View 1 (cartoon, rainbow, N blue to C red):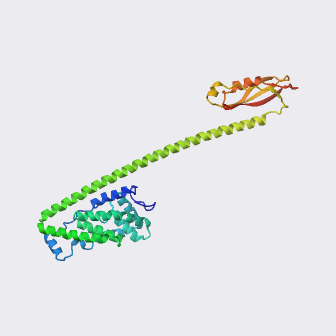
View 2 (view 1 turned 180 degrees about the horizontal axis):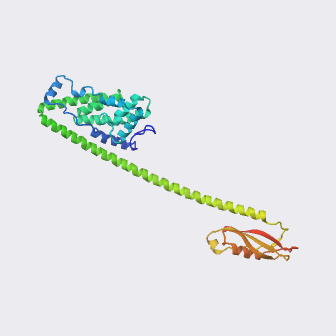
View 3 (view 1 turned 120 degrees about the vertical axis):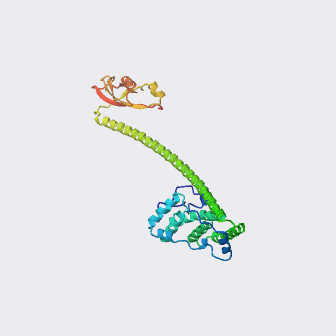
Amino acid sequence: MSGNENGAVGPRWPRYAGTLALAIMLGACGGEQPAPEPSAAPGDAAQEADGAAPAAQQEPPQQDDDAMSALSVDELRAAARQAYAESRLYAPPGDNAFEYYLALRERAPGDAAASSALTDLLPMTVIATEQSRDREDYEEARRLQRLIERASQEHPALPRLATTIEEAEQATARRIEQQQLTAEQEAERQRALEAERQRQQQEAQAEAARLAEEQAEQEEAERLAAEQRAAEREEAERLAAERREAEERAARERQAAAATEPATPDLHAISTPAPRYPPEALRAGQGGEVLVEFTVNPDGSVANARVVRADPPRVFDREAVAAVRRWRFEPVGDPVTTRRVIGFNPGG
C-alpha cells in the first residue's frame, strides 16, 4: 500500500503482483465480522418476493460512525494503520482500515495518505463483496457495497454489485421457498457459512504472515550486508588514515633533519656506488629510505657512518651504511660531517 512517513500503513509488502494476490486472499474471507443473522426464513422470502424491503437493505446502525466521530484525526490515522497491519482491511464492522480511512478522509479531505489507502483498498473490497454475494452472505455484501459507495459514489462496479446482489438474494429467497428449509436447516447453513469464512480468514492470515516473514528476512539480509559494507569502508578509511599519518610523519622528520643539518662546505663526490638491494625486500617489492650521517675525511674517504632514521626500520640500514662507507669525495681541508638520504625503490 502506498504512503509516506505520515501515511504509511501496515507491513511493507511489495505493491506489485503480491498486493493483488493478498487482496484476493483477504477478500475471500470477508473479514472478521460476527456471523450474520439467517438471511431469510421461508415465510420471509415470500414476503420479500411480494415487495417488502429486505432487512439487509435497511440503513445500518450509527453507533460505529458515532464512535469514530469521537476520535481525533491522529487517532483515526493510528487506528487505520493498526487495522491494516492486522489484516482488518474491511472487517469487522466499525473496526477496520477501510472505515477508519473513510472517517479520516471525511475529517481531513486533503489527507493524501487516506485517499491513497482507499484507492488501494477499493479493489480488495469489490472482490470481497462479490465473494460475500456468492456465498449468499448478503448482509455482509451490502455492508461492503455501502463502504464502496461511501468511498467512491461513481465507482464503476457499484451498479453491477447492486444488481447482482439483488438478483442473487432473490434467487436465494426463491430457492429457500421452494425447498421449504426449516429453521434448523438454515441455522446449519449459517454455521457452515461462518466456518468457511473463518477457514478462509485463517488461510489468508497465514499467507500474510508468511509474506511478512519473508519481507523481514530480506530486510535483515540487506541490513547485514549494509553493515558489512560499512565495516569494510571503515577499515579501508582507517588504513588510509594510517598511511597518510606515516607519510606525514616521515615528511616532518625529513624537514626536521634538514633544518638541523649543519651547514657544510661543498662536497664533490668522486664515487658513490649504489647500495645492494636486500634480496628479501626485493622479492617482497618493498621500498624505503635511510638517512645516513657520516664524516668526510680530509682525504675524501668516509668514516663514522651511522643511521639517523630509517623507513621502514632495520630493513635497509646495513646496506645503506655499507654503501656510504665506499663513497669517495674530493679532498677537503677539514673533516666534514654531513647527511644523505639513501633511497631504495624496487622498481627503480
